[in-house]
View 1: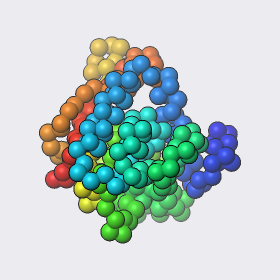
View 2 (view 1 turned 90 degrees about the vertical axis):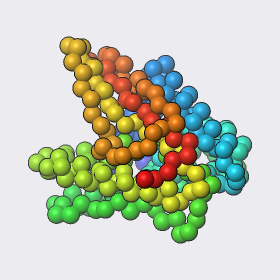
View 3 (view 1 turned 60 degrees about the vertical axis):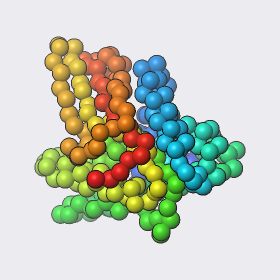
Amino acid sequence: MLRDLFEFVRNPYPWHLAPMGYVRELAGIADRGRELGPAWKEHLVKSRRTIEESAEACAVRDSVLVVGSGNLLDIPMAALCQKFKRVVLLDILHSRATRRGVRDLDNVELLSADVTGVARPIYRAVHSRNISALPKSAPPPMNGRRFDLIVSANLLSQLGVIPCNFLKGHFPAMPPARLSAFTRDLIDTHLQWISDSAERVCLITDVIRIERLSTGETFEKNIVEGISLPEPDACWTWNIAPERSVYGDRAVVHNVHAYRDFKSI
């Protein structure tokens, strides 16, 4: 909580994001990126390469929108700034490190917005104890504005994680099927929204989580609610949590699919 307060004082953001866990998660990803650098390197390199290849294929390069830009670990900022006249970074909040990292880049714009539109309604619903109807996804309106390229990198599986954890923390008896349907709406809407808002979409998403226990057991889980995706242009394994790095009794890897020109189906 002290870390959240310090971040708020130095970099104000809507306060409901702290108790929901958004601030803590942003800082946690930065920490894990530093601690697990060697294990994450291949995934980050391939993510950046896919984005660069997608950008290179754009016929027009006026504007690019990076959705869920986070700590910019997987975003080739130098290449995007060189190729596009304007680079827009969209996230629910931007860390001080990110702000410092782009402040001297004249063609970069930071846009703070909730790409799902559900964080504040979920927070209000929980604190009013009224969860009779969970909110539908409502991405930021583009008002007819289209980008030459939209990048959604390593975000799809995470859209529902914090809202669902917040709901489960306050309503532990909430049926898993209800949370699954809620998350599926977030994912489906995101895919349609990015497809409708750009000439080309670069999508990178982890789809399967594999946990390998020290006992030898292996468990797999689809982390995008079983959505139907086309064959990827590339796929790889993200060594997201090597054994004994995050969990004492297991190693975790994610299977990643990458699309240089994703088409919503």
